[in-house]
Image 1 (cartoon, rainbow, N blue to C red):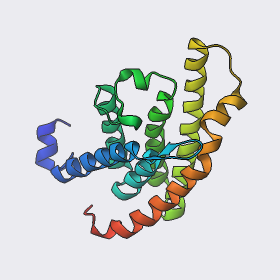
Image 2: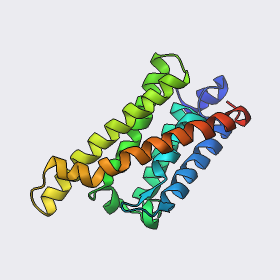
Image 3: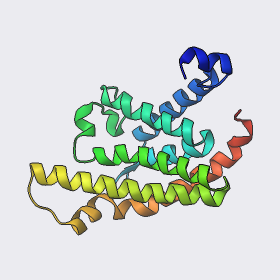
Length: 188
């Protein structure tokens, strides 16, 4: 369907969708800059990805995440530590950033195939997070071993996954609570 046909039939992206997608991408960027200082510091990036998907739905939320990734790819400092650029995406932790897109795709799949209740949504987000961890860890190991040398899977999991599981589940729960409160004021 061409863009002219989409406008004539009312199908396609609407101005309100563009606004929501832009706000979603901006929210992910802002949350990536917020670092919680702990023994292993973490950001609120995953909270924002969960929140945007829950609030905007799978399609708009995933597009917002894609816009965020693309902004970072072209050098806009949207990643943690106010960083950006293709080098970040192809560095050690870039796989986790790409993994955010898998969270969105799994969320879309689950909410299309199953009923859109909160159990399905949370299950999709948890499964998506697991895929994000798996993809990011494989990516990390490949890049790290290419640049530095051999490293074991358990070591990488202790560096990149285990310290983040509980905080990410807390962020997921927080995203569910906040999205549920804000959802009534968001137009479909």
